[in-house]
Length: 298
Image (tube, rainbow, N blue to C red; front, top):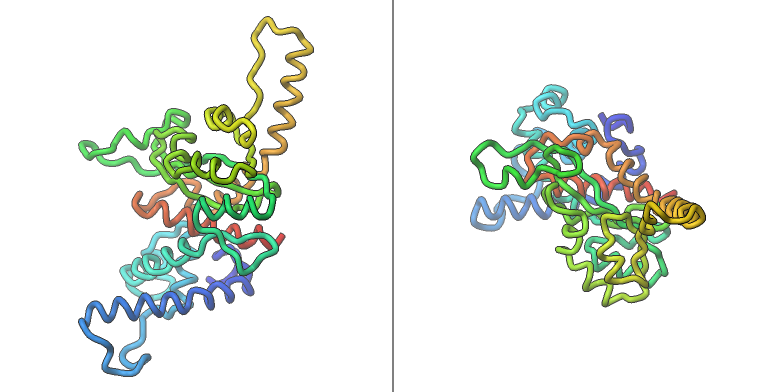
């Protein structure tokens, strides 16, 4: 199961990832055990029964689940362990993957974790950003439960969760976040993350967006570029031709963020999410972070 066809990672990258997560997982495991015992360990580290699923296999199982969305029961059969063991492994590794942040091209030691990090990076490196929202179909809350209508997207006419993705000019994923129910507008979702304050704090940062962020473009005309407004029906032909040319140029400059969204959705889990909605944010951040590692090395 460690092959790239299952995990989505080349062997050398899988080895680096496992080594990177090892210390964080060990610290979290020791903290969990100490909380359960109520005191420090009395035996040396490594004493006692071994895990049914070693750490390396826990990472691989989590990657396979994220990549192919195989049920936990199926993975348990493949590894000859209980289903709860796989569920526990995924629950331990997925937050570690989500917390890694997003890789930066040409700077292996730098990772971006917040929207403020992205703006600071773009201001320091002179990077022009691309912002876009994307939706993933999720299960609808059961009848009678609060928030049942909140996930119904007006655009897709289905139950979705929304994510905002930011890339650089070459399409490398720099951030994915602002996870909100699908009913919320793209611009509202990113505004709730404080993006307007960041534009004021970093006036040199520029970005290209689609028509869904026209309000931001109107508020920050020197920093946010949205597609040009469509001419009226009675506009002269030359005005319409100029509009078409400007729209095509802006679209071709912004299309790289659409390619990044498509790259995230090569992972089956984000084609249609079948897990619990409360784990969606971690799942998307984990996958986007892994995709950013590959994009940063191009």
